[in-house]
Each structure stands twice: as C-alpha cells, then as structure tokens.
Length: 231
Image (cartoon, rainbow, N blue to C red; front, side, top):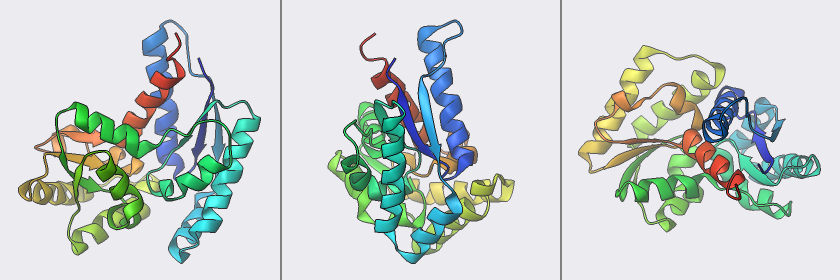
C-alpha cells in the first residue's frame, strides 16, 4: 500500500473521521488486522482560521505547503488536504512537492457523475459556497452547482465554525440544514454535496430527499483506491 499523507487539523473533528474512514476502508479491502499506511500533519486550526478571515490565503497556502513538504519527507507518496475550504490553496500545496495531491472536488465530481446526476446543491463554508475555487472545480467536472441564498449560506457557515468544528452537534441545526436542503431540492438539485468535511457529523442521508455526497468519505474512498491500485 502506498503511504498516504494527510494535511489535517482543519478541524481535527473531521480529520479524526478521515483517519477512521481510511483505516476502515483499508481493513475492508485487505481483511484481517490490516490498517492504512499513513502520516498525518495536523495544523493549529485557530491560526488557519485567522488567515481565512483576514483573506491572507497566500500565507495560509505557505503553511499547508510546509506541511506537505514535511509529509513527503516522512515518506508520503500521495497527499490529501482534509478540508474542502483549504482546497483554495491546493495549487500552492501541489507545487511544493513532487508527489501527487488527490483533489477532493475531483473525487466528489466523479462520484456524482457515476451516480448519473449533474445538478447538485452545495453546502459548505461561505468561502466554498461563494468562491470559484471549489464551485468552478465541480463545474469543470461536469456538474451544475446550486448554492443556498445569502441568509441560508450565513447559517450553514455559522453552524460549521461555531458548532461542528468544536464538536457540538445540535438537533436544531440539523433541522435548519434540512430546510436549506429542501430549498435546494425545490430549486432543482438532484443531489446534495456536503462540501465541508464537518457537515458529515450533522447530516445523513435520512436528512435529504435526494442523494447526499459526503465529501470526506468520498475523498477517503478515492485515497484508499489509489493507494491500493497496484494490488
């Protein structure tokens, strides 16, 4: 198995899910006591969030690029950024190393297309929902992307940072997300992309009348498939 390099900590709540998913998927593929070969670099999310809020994306990219170089030096053969939002700096991270970076949006778009869907609703941080680095990547993957209205986007973003990133899961927030999902479906969404890895802590398939696409799981599945491709 190739050694996976995980750039995590954004937040550690979802990075823990990545670790669990990758190891479970590896065990399912290989059986017995097998677990994944991986190295993890976990950043301090408080520092990253400050750079996000200030719009200092180049500096944030330098932090993650440094993490990528450390992972490569530790033996990583394939890298993952364990967060949707920080794929805004994916190009800077990829340029810092000589090993491949598995882009989360590409893995997601491929799964949506394989399901025979084209028009999806996107939930995520305000950065992910409103900027082109992620929506554009999905669109280049053949998808038509819908996002909630401004009020709903603010709600979705607030729940992510104030609740999910600190391990708080509230039924009131789940109900609010269900309403946002219902509005996206009414607008024509055939599926819902959970475009923030923390949202999977809150939303399940039962919360949506159309298929949901949990990006952390899809990223983990693609990573394990790539790491085991030669077996």
